[in-house]
Length: 272
Image (tube, rainbow, N blue to C red):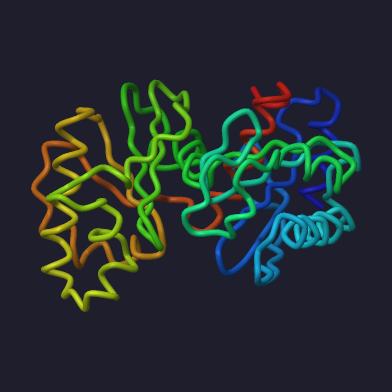
């Protein structure tokens, strides 16, 4: 199998060998084995519904379940290799510092330590939007773009990743910028569009106002829009009036998994 050949070849140098990435979401937790040369999954994703309530203990058990399933596959990395995990909140020095859309018991949790203990192998956790941004910068729409690239994910809220010359500036919470007296994500997220019953034209106007504000503050070279709503970009892109080029994300629903694996590889010097 091609996957096995890649694994054996990469294991000799320990650079760009496949790693496991896990993406924690509000409704589902999914994982996969990532080919770090191509930025693609080896085999299918494995998904388990997010437990409710999504407490640290319950989520750790699901993460362990997913890692166990992926580790049983022929293309799986060695059992002691590190695992990358995304989380929908601010992560600083391995500690959860925000929990806007998850269980409040996460606040102050040393998530790196908790997952490392449960899995019995090194774990590095990264903000979910940051992971998507890393993946898009290396393998997707931002590949080879110098200067500032801003990845904006439109979902329950507005996630963001700030990339400069290919390097991540972590925890850029641009969805919480104030626009017209409101937290931007309360008006311009995908969920806000549905909640307020906005037409695509109306939504495009609101999103444009937000992106123009971000553009003024940071003068990016490129906007990359992700999240499920990016599939409907032809409905609202025509209403955007920006100086900055704007494109949709390329990695789609795999971006978080790929970015999680890439982050842990970079942290442990396992990626070139």
